[in-house]
Amino acid sequence: MTAHQTIPSADLVARRNAGAGWHAQMPDDKAMLRAARDLTKDIAEARAAIYWPDLIVSAVLGYAALAGAILVDSVGPAVVLGIVSALSLYRALLFIHEISHLHRDALPGFRSAWNVLVGIPLLTPSFMYEGVHTLHHKRTQYGTVEDPEYLPLALMKPWSLPLFVAVALLAPVALLFRFAVLVPLGAILPPIRQLTWQRFSALAINPEFRRRPPEGTLKKRVFWQEFGGFAWSWLLIGSIFALGWRPILIALAIVSVTATLNQLRTLVAHLWENEGEAMTVTAQFLDSVNVPPPGLVAEIWAPVGLRYHALHHLMPSMPYHSLPEAHRRLVRELGDGSTYHGANHKGMAVLVLRIARSTMGRRAA
Image (cartoon, rainbow, N blue to C red; front, side):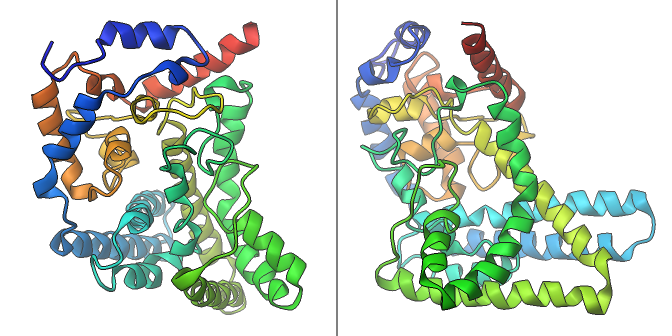
């Protein structure tokens, strides 16, 4: 026990074992929140010397491996290059999460460069996350029906889990259809434009979420990013006539792997045990997941700081490169028996098994 521990770990276990609704009775661990704030003030600035090289190397490696997978004739090397491409582009793509949290004056030009290098080529420009992801971090909206990024997956039917992951396989084709077909149709027919914006313009998992019209500077960015996506999508379609089906099919397959990996990461980013009530910050933290070292595999499936997803919910504006140090400081200060320790988990397999058991248990009940 340390001076910071206000909620004993045994109490946390008892609350969780109480079943649905345990979040509503979870008080805030003010000492933990205060420590998170006070111990990390000196590492809260985004460092351009880390962001830019990481993004550029990831994108260049991803596209180079993609080109190699298209050009080689042997299946074995093509598969290896495809995996390298999928993982590298996955890391580059996840900078969209950082962009949604960056202060407007931090890293000048980074958002535009990311959209040119990654967002538009992968038909996932930053407007699809900006103004959406921040709703997930709102104190009164997290875990409720108004949260675009939350579903009580642990409380749903068993078949919902494989369906949740499998739908990501179709994401590249769906995005191609959105930009190549729905965007130009929407420019002519306002009802299609409204439907496209409300239902197909956000990286959301909540089927009840409807996006509101863009405002301010975002409205201008949406226009140019959608135009870029439209032009690129038709360039991809046109490549079939110039280069045949092989290049675009390989590219779509690689992006499907990337999308599926991201969906698996999303599946274990939270415990998904909230039934829709508003939650305290501590409850939101404990419903989220850290997968800290020593394991290295989590850095592959949850890169760019996302292996510290629970910690991110304590400090949403903390840059990804500072999260490992912030985690070390909090562990050292708060100790293994603290509330903070309750959000640390061992890996993806353990978390998937936990959610699967929860769904199967509800089926049996």
